[in-house]
Picture 1 (spheres, rainbow, N blue to C red):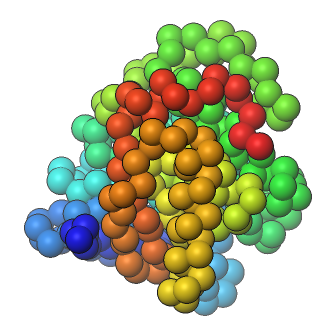
Picture 2: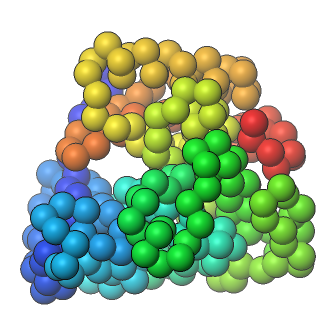
Length: 258
């Protein structure tokens, strides 16, 4: 049976930086906790909109500099909030600050108020997920290539750079959030090291795991789906162990995910 691993998730809303820092430092000193997470929102999502809400990546960078052991990340960053090339640079920088402890969390984005209030387009669900797939492809290329050209349906790059590269090779583990069976789990199968699933009942969760395994088999038969573990908290996360080298070599070069 896979080992149950414990972590923390602190929602950076209606609080102070000093309070968050104390929790993260305490967790970093407590061997029982192996990972720590923030969310990625620009206004509180519980308890009213008028309180403070820290931006996720800048706060994560600060906490990475103040800890030394915990793996860390955003569960999960909204792809729609940042251009994928900019997002990749941010992730690489945090992995350097953290000395190789970043888990790169990303999802399609969903919060209507945040998009409307800041004038950020909130595309249809299908388009958001297709954009997520392109963003993952862009990130993996920028993490590993000196120069990246990309001609996608939604994003284009010409001789793009990402330096310095992340400490982790070939790149930090990808944590992809979402549970849509036709599109999202296909992106998870193709790009994720970690699937961040939403809370659900046991039978629905088992069903989605079966669907995910089917997508994994369709993407590459050599991917292992025999070792899974869950993180429990405000969300449930299923890990799929795989060989980075074999999965990358088996993955098609195409940028589309659907």
